Image 1 (cartoon, rainbow over the protein chains, first blue to last red):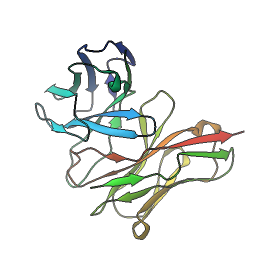
Image 2 (tube, chains in turn brown, purple; image 1 turned 60 degrees about the horizontal axis):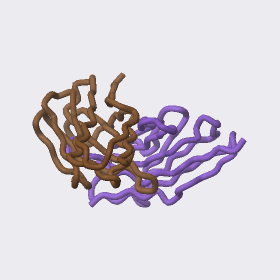
Image 3 (cartoon, rainbow over the protein chains, first blue to last red; image 1 turned 90 degrees about the vertical axis):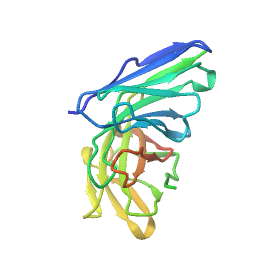
Length: 115
Length: 115
């Protein structure tokens, strides 16, 4: 079974702090993703990566950065946390295969509260 | 740009009754379609997927979905719901970018099961 783990289930940070959210997958997947989930808005893509050291902006990258130094690990960084970044953050991974978007496997999520 | 619409924010169904959750998508080519389920406080679990071929796809937990190209729809069905089916359901569409780009999700349908 694919396993995607996230470093914390719940996190509380103060405004202005630098925040790191870590994600690790154990299936040797090439692609990794960070989404945020807010009530009434569904899931929105923040950043994704299709290879080590590669990154692409998603729909809402402002205020975030990412790092992928190893294939299995994808980190989301909030350089200076703000209250509007209070949300559920979901990491996902998928295999790179010819011809299409293959299913993504999700971690359990990190509920981040910025006070 | 691709998009997904789930017209129903909430649906209430009696236990044992049938269920249909609606999903309409917009995509310029052949879409890759997915249904995910999210139990409270959890990540997303894949229920089923459509890539090509038979337009009626079977998934886990007794769910099925039918792809109708003429209606741009991919509705999820279950003949008899159980109390454990209460959850948030998300429809998603992906493109032909080799899986490296993210999925576009609908805003979700919250399913409530009445005893």
